[in-house]
Length: 328
Image (cartoon, rainbow, N blue to C red; front, side, top):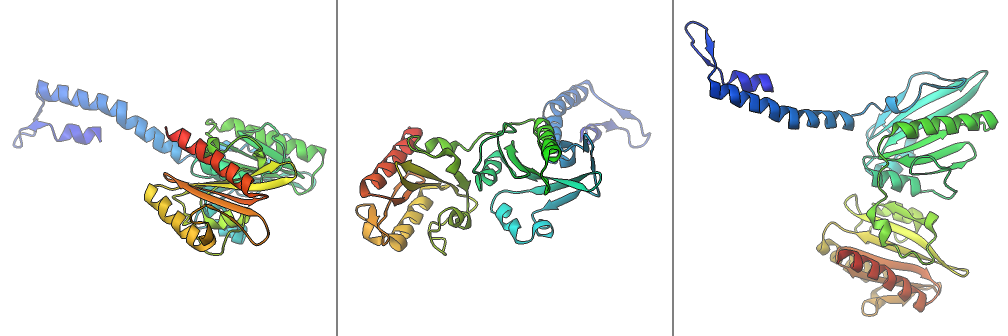
């Protein structure tokens, strides 16, 4: 690009082929070169970071474990070649690509790394929380280990390192390779800011789920076959459990890109799901539990399975206070 800029500012004699440059043009070219060094080169570098070779994040060996076979790389179109219908889970987030590397150790032990580029830290957090249940094992931003499988997220990446035959050595290798990958990911990534909107009292933190689409909502709490809350990739949603003594309630918070979209979705939800609660915002459903809902700004808040009207109203009010306080 710099060469092209120089060429069009050259003053030449077309008959002799001689080229002359004026002092003014020379100064202009110098300025353009400095401009390119400051602005164009960093953009090129950033572009390179976005297109990072995921294989660079995964070691080729660990102790006696060595890479076996060719690596796999799957994008949004080819992910089903690797995992059949389960690919829909990742496509409901901003998933970009999956890198797979397999390791073996004599005589016949195997270990697999799945490194998912989820597009952004929020969606890396979201896919990790989808099935979170265990304690953090101290790798990445958050992690857990269960029966040969170590899962963690860091930056925009979600990582699974696993062995189908768990023993002391294979477990050690799973942890070692996971730590290497986590160290190779330079950005920590932020937890979605929406998480701070959840009232802390009685919250079961490991129950927090972050998602976008109604199919994911139905995995965590079945609401309806139809998308009655108008959820989609442009919406952000959280659902979490709250425990009061032996009773559990669900709190759902949804953020829409515009206030009008939130209001439209809320009206549709009330009309379909709890029409008798349009005035009060709270109803008792057939199984005896209570549901409450409200809309504020670009948000919808709903409480499900509350043991009493008091509890439903309490959780709803607490969440609404958090949201409106954050907007001030």
